[in-house]
Image (cartoon, rainbow, N blue to C red; front, side):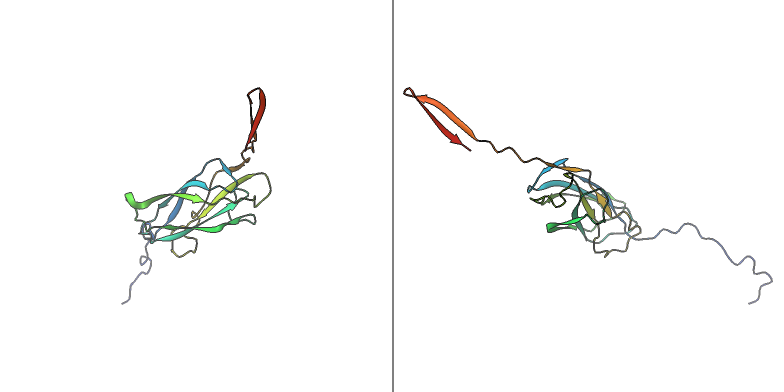
Length: 171
């Protein structure tokens, strides 16, 4: 078919919305201090901000000496901590997921620096989900200070029995 004018054979479509999931880090609530060798109790919150169902996925957790995730000073926990994130809907009450975590804290300071650390979380760690935005899969806690160890206290209980002094050491 021949047309006299080819000038009007094009058009611009409206906005195109990709129908893909988008796991997004919302927050990681942690205490501000932790004892060396004691578990750190935290709460992780994730959102599916996409326009499609998000299948179950895996998130990884590690420690960092600073608040820059992915640089050379990040260390894996021992044992490594992986979190199973359930499937998530989109635009409904089930597009958010929250979970309490018990993070094993090392008994020996892995950095030997200022005693201030951060917990890093990477959602969809194996990159198994094709998402609309991969840049919001990384999250980091606020600073967590290594608390000094509790004091080692020795007590001596002293008294008088029958006019004589006696004492018992208690540790």
